[in-house]
Amino acid sequence: MNSYPGNLFVVAAPSGAGKSSLVKALMELDSRVQPSVSHTTRRPRGQEKHGREYFFVSEAEFDELVHAQAFIEWAHVHGRRYGTSRKAIEDRMNQGADVILEIDFQGALQIRQVFSNAVLIFILPPSWEELRSRLDNRGEDSPEVIELRLKNAAEEMSHA
Image (cartoon, rainbow, N blue to C red; front, side, top):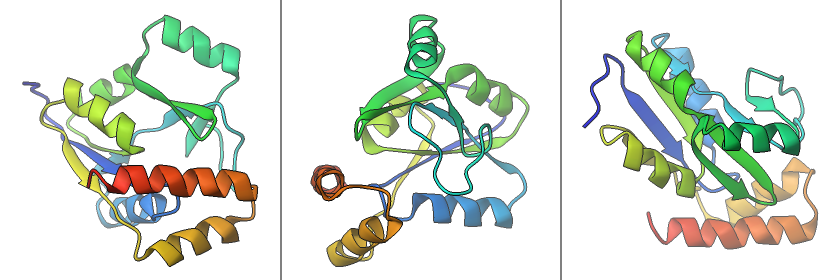
């Protein structure tokens, strides 16, 4: 059992289901909710900025963080790696902040093992067709990557 003044909310969903939109709306509604910014080896999308949506790092930098045990969880997702800093979450929660973490399903399960009081929220897409449409309309993934994302989404949704 963890005891922090702040709360940890973990929002998980398949890629394209609307995690980012939900988290953004929640933060606009409540200034006490602060985002957890994960590290990733993927390239920035659109208007994303280093340190705001993600810390964009090289494979070598990510390896160093893994070796230093800086991550509370990390995972391979769609050919890239994502990790969550333990210190960043603990520091914010110790200051009384409510922290919201936008993450994939496998990462959410790892977080729950460390933060037993974390509130897990799993978002489902409106429909399978809408999920496919959202992934297609991003315009950044090949048809093969989209199929991989859909396959992974089916697996994640089977646990919801």
